[in-house]
Image (cartoon, rainbow, N blue to C red; front, side, top):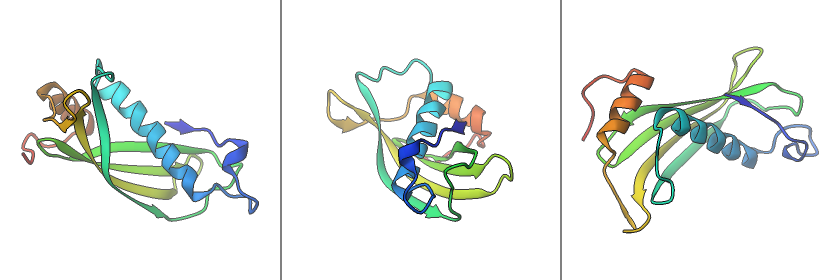
Length: 135
């Protein structure tokens, strides 16, 4: 997914501030779920980050052309692991890598809930995951 670098994303050194990377990851994560897990009732269900780690591999300059990549690499019963990259569109160099653990959350009951089977099937098909997954 192409990412836009805004004027205020760039610090006085001419590169994108590291805090902005997490906004990029949120943008690509949102796009992923909009395309893969359609019809979610976001008024009642949330996807919550329970762990997140980022590696900053190379700086991104203000005039860089970048894109974000998101995929699920592991499915659990109530959680799943995301792997995300920010890449330079022209060189395909990975500029940053992010790993996060997410859970599905019922906003009314205030508790985690299992992933629906339709999400499992959609994620497995989209990310080409093997049919056996960790429960």
